[in-house]
Length: 417
Image (cartoon, rainbow, N blue to C red; front, side, top):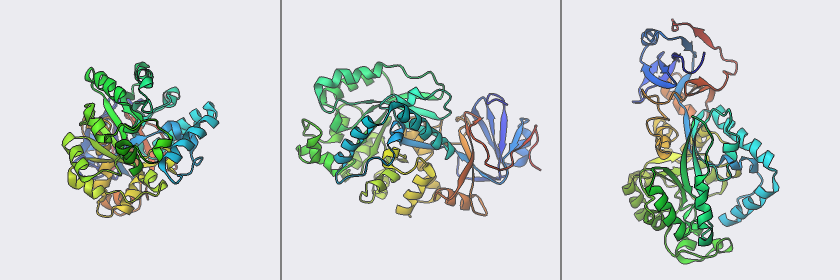
């Protein structure tokens, strides 16, 4: 059976787009998209399509990792956090040059497959090296690929950096393109201006690392601190001023990290409509002060979660990220945290309404999970604490993984009685 043929997936618990739990219902898929959520076993049978009865599992939208660096997967465990963030950056640059390209490519693909196996169906990936594009053939992961642009603050390199945007991406129906000016401290004023001109001619999803550490602010605004060992000249203005001045702060922008943001900056981000992406695993890796999610939420800024890279994380598992987030933010409920890893994350990468939801018309990107609990809410609580297990994943209505020993029952046109 191909993903172009109508199919209905039936499960013990299905999470409808409005947050309701459907017991014994299903999801009807036509042409790789969700036609509707079936609210009962009878509704499942009425679709007239072949029914795949998944049994005692929870059916959820596939997770969306709003920020990844899959091309750094080969550097897992090679570089310690260091005393200062620039120490880690220098270590990454050295380590990347010491690993053979074939190994880096193999690890990049393995990272993508790990995301899929753990229930993630869509990522916003910074493909700085083109490595992910090189291994894309046959990969079922849905990707918003951000082409990274930077000149290390050196205006003489701006033209070459901008020229990278002309490179063609892979021919892959699951891929869409975006742009990532790396960070305010690695983009010169001249490159910001050129990017502003480039983006006026096209609409593009944008991802920017911003306000990750206090050292970043010290360098950008005052020209002091450890970044001086990496960079030649401070712009003597805030990172947010640089982003906004280039016209790149808006609803199509994902700001990554935001750990060192001030209250006035949070208010500016809220007015812009941009999304803030937090990566709990990386946050823990660097031993950073607690992320103030409450302050971002109070300011009205949409939040999303990502995994970042294996160079600064122990796994590429969005359920683990949700569990780490819940451990440090106990005031957030399970449904809220799931939203950070699904619908809100899809918004962050410019795919709202298409990914991260089981709504009619959305892509049929979803996952079945087993988890402890007597009902849907209890099982979702377990899943968002990292205590569940994905047993099957679909992208565009096509299964990408097996059921790990679970019975896979197919009944042509009939649902479970």
